[in-house]
Length: 107
Length: 120
Image (cartoon, rainbow over all chains, first blue to last red; front, side, top):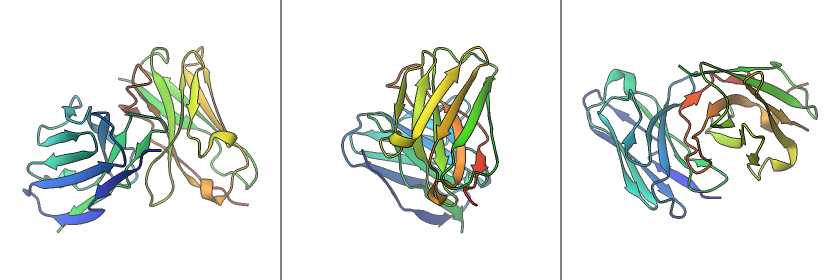
């Protein structure tokens, strides 16, 4: 199975900050990479797929980049509603696997 | 707007079978892949397996010996059976829609999730 490693596992930030979360795959996944946001008690929400394609309805402050083994999720200007946990997921090969999550909380 | 809703018993005893059903509304179950994903309390996400409306399945090898996913297209539902459960299977179980191809399995619609404790 492909292991997905996210860093950092958690960090504190302020509204207005530019934040970057990293996801590394244990082997190449091309661009078959998705990002999700999860708030407490809620289901994950798809933000980005194909490494850099914004899901319909997702604000443009979210962006994704990378291919192969290294990927990043960037939030250009953190809003209050963005404090959440973020997960990456590879769908290059089975079994599908998720990163361990990155929790973004308020500084 | 596609909506998914999980249903099933709220508590399962150790060694018994966990059974959940996901009802899809606002769209047809055909032409997409449908998955079960779980999340132990305070932990990350684990993909359990998928089913296509034709009945084709694939499972996570870590659970394959204990999992069965089935589909009922007439009811627009798919179901999960996980047998011989232990406390380690305690989790929030989500159903989710994958892509229209097994190579496009990112999840754009999710159910709200249902917590299934395994306890005697």
